[in-house]
Image 1 (cartoon, rainbow, N blue to C red):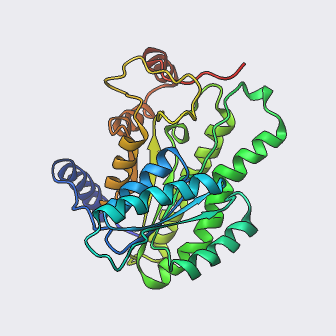
Image 2 (image 1 turned 90 degrees about the vertical axis):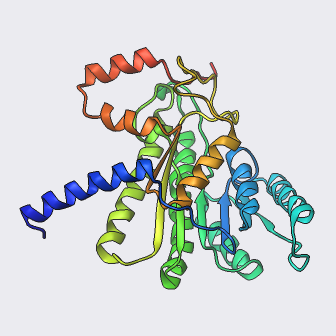
Length: 304
């Protein structure tokens, strides 16, 4: 428990540290020698994360429910590595595994296979997710259950598999692909928003638990909140001011994600402007929030 004086000091230091980091961001840590596991690596952001992490010197493990697309990602990484590598003694830079991360038993099995074939995971990027879009009352129960299995429970199963080793070695990073839908609700994405709010709660709670029980730990956590990314996942995405709040390509999103967790940021917004926008917006009355939402006209459609 801290005193009133200590509280004031912490508040002042916190604001000062934040302002300094806006001008002088923390140095980006190296990924050379890291073993990065990416779920949903077969396409979109996951594939770009794999390619870009490998270019920075990391070994990459590609998990996807689709064995063929996971293999294609690993093959692209290895082809790039073969062309650009300066050390011929390490011809393989990426490995692929088929895994339905929504199934705990399958995660446990493939995790053991991964350790045997590649080694211990030092960076876990929970990227796999689905985003069905339609009015709430048109969802079937099994669709909602599947969405939570893929978007939420999968992250529990992978964290429970790989985080104990990170803690034991006092080295590692867990990156969770959440969403701006984990900060604010969106029409036609009610179950999806619910799942992303759950991920926000998971990562916030885990951060504070580690801060309390393992204050000196060097294991880091990063939660990523992308706006709509052009991967085909969102149906008819909308933004009234694309220069201000753009729909990014997967490569741009992956670049910002990697830059964020390399600097040990607790949260990353894509685009960056959404961080202060949402933090300030939550302080406003509900009527003002909805007026701003109407003005910005951001959202998605749905398949009728």
